[in-house]
Amino acid sequence: MSGRKGNPYVVRPPTAVLTRGFDPRLSVGSARPAVFRSSTYVFSSPEAAERAFAIALGRARPAEGESVDLIYSRLSHPNAEILEDQILPLEPGARAAAVFNSGMAAISTLFFTAGQPGASFVYTTPLYGGTQHLVHQLLEPLGMRGIPVAAGDTAALTAAIGAAERLRLVFVETPANPTLVMSDVAAAAEAARRRPEPPLVAVDNTFLGPCFQHPLALGADLVVYSATKYLSGFSDMLGGVVLGRDPEQVALLRGTRAILGNILQPDECWMLAGRLPTVELRMNRQSKNAQRIAEALADHPQVARMRYPTRFTDPEQIRIRDAQCRFPGAIFSMELRGGKAAAFEFLRRLEIARDAVSLGGVESLACHPATTTHSELSPEEMRRCGLGDALVRVSVGVEDWRDLLREFRRALDAIGPGAAS
Ligand SMILES: *Cc1c(COP(=O)(O)O)cnc(C)c1O
Image (cartoon, rainbow, N blue to C red):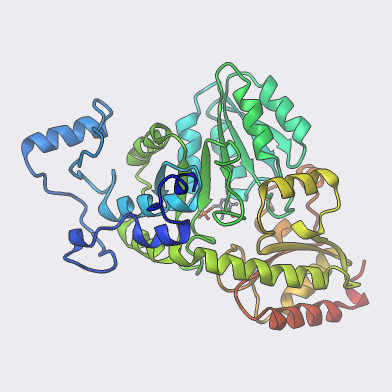
């Protein structure tokens, strides 16, 4: 964090995430946060209630350091406040956060807050399946115009941002799921700033953040997470987070959240607060595991192509990777010889890694995107983003990588010529 040099008491993120956001004096001295399940909060005075509503409804702004009474848990509650403060040091440049009851809740709230009928937004493709559905099934019928740009095409991205009419939002997902193609966040932010009325630039940072990629530091305004994935890390809860450089923008999202009713609930906030201190440990281990496995499998005769950041060959992809990522992350996608039949045979033989969608948990998962997570894409969309039916996506967990490598090798060896077609 940039303040560290000037202020010796500002600590580094792994320390801050254990010490921020929570005051034991507010929980009878409990060393870890309590869970506050109340739906409503008792006002300290009628004047305090009046003041809290004026601030909640945007008629007044809180003074520096003012403590405002809580109102009702759909607006906010203590466990959300603790988490929203605790998570800030993990995302360099973030000055405010808002938590949601899923990644899709965070993304929909962002689009509904930024959008207006007649407005347009630019987005990279392929997008996460749920976001893709949101764009085509909800936003476009409401009169918003989505402008797709292929992930990794920096010239097309900056041209689309420059040319779009009434552009309100640029939504970048990098690396793309499941092709792992990277898009240039700094170039998108720069193109947005060149417009007379700059649109917001938001990055879905679920795959590499918060440890390996920092979009706010690259110039983005907002970062979005599915906390269901690495942030929580155990495939046992749903959650979403948006972090921003400008607290006013995050306050607007909280306002929409209060009406949509999609704030993260107290128990889940408490769970996620307990998981954040280990996210760096887990992600480092998972990324190292994945790198060893992806590199060892890349030359297997059954693997036609290994998609993983350390295996990039396109100079533009290498440039973006080196400019914006610290480590390659824990997801690789393999295109197998033998198409869909080979992919299914591979998945059928796995025992340690399970055939399931989702990613980012401590356990390894594998899936076949073309028939599951991305089955809503048209054949033309699939072709354009390079997603074929030979592709298997693997999310690597914290197991001993040698066990996983042996399992994947055996499964590949066993596919055999029967699957080739
Ligand atoms: C899972 C995921 C989402 C959606 O998050 P949920 O918590 O499932 O709603 C959005 N973007 C990406 C990249 C994801 O992997």
